[in-house]
Amino acid sequence: MKTALVNVLVFNGRQLVPDSTVVIDDGLLGVDPNGARVIDAGGRVLLPGLIDAHVHIDGPDQLAALASHGVTTALDMASVAQITAPLRGLPGRTDIRSACVPAIAPGSLHSHFPGVGQAGLISGPEEAQRFVAARIAEGADYIKIVIGSPFADHDQATIDALVAAAHEQGKLAVAHASSTGSVAKAQAAGADILTHVPTDQVLDPTAAAQMAAAGRVAVPTLTMMQAIVTNLAPPGADYANASASVAALHAAGVPILAGTDANSSTVLPANVPYGAGLHSELELLAAAGLATADLLRAATVLPAIYFGLADRGIIEPGKRADLVLLDDDPLTDIRATRSIRRIWIGGVECEPADMRK
Ligand SMILES: [Zn+2]
Image (cartoon, rainbow, N blue to C red):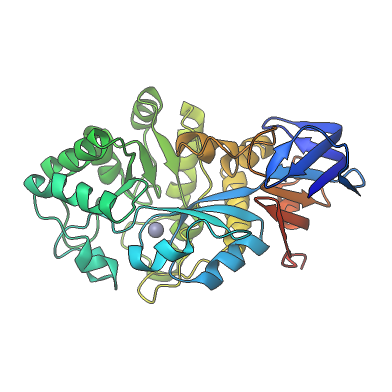
């Protein structure tokens, strides 16, 4: 069955293209509206399905929450493979990728996290190859390394070996780095993607320029950084440092991806909500200085590019029919991403949640 959305304003990754027609044909975006059921979108804004570049998945209800808030793809950054494997590739559900178990230093705060903590332990560089091979065997799409966890940390040689092993196996290395020192370790090792952002100091322009020059990407998770400072008040931590670090990265030209750290964990400082959290994250990134087009890119085309998801992130023929139709214009005010009218995931329509408060 074919559907043609007519009279839509299509976000093309930069701006809105007026009076467009978008064809949904068997799960993909097509070109020929002939024979299609026609939906007049009434001049509403059509975005590619939103991508949350940092979540933790441990149940099917979370996929439903993500979907109903327009998040059609979610990138899990630590979970138990036995739980996430059955949730992959379900028709009409949010499509997930996963790091499975991250690389965790023995004795660190993260080693006490239920499920992943003990399973992800690695105590030296000689274990890196085995660690990465085990992740790939359980279906990991990329390798996550927790750097700078309180109480104990990997030494630099272990981080270097993990990144090298990931790259040897053709996988991206994603580094958890929420302090300036952790960012330096991640950069020294050659990690591809850094998630979280420093709260201890503002990232200095030299470090930001180094990230940009190396082609590294940032997933700041400001929602979680704000929650950590508010709920735990670690000594020396200031949310203003996190927000200013995003500004420094953006000014240096580092691609910024929207990620929330949505989770249901009992040990994290906040249970960032699935789906709704992404809309809050966009507002925090706006407050950090990103323009509205950059915010939309941060939640669509950029994560698709940098995580190698070539079949999505932009509204073009041949891509997945992951679409979000909005009543209001998010290029004028980013809060308009909450005005969701309709959602399609792989061409299957989903019921939107009401976020208009
Ligand atoms: Zn996380």
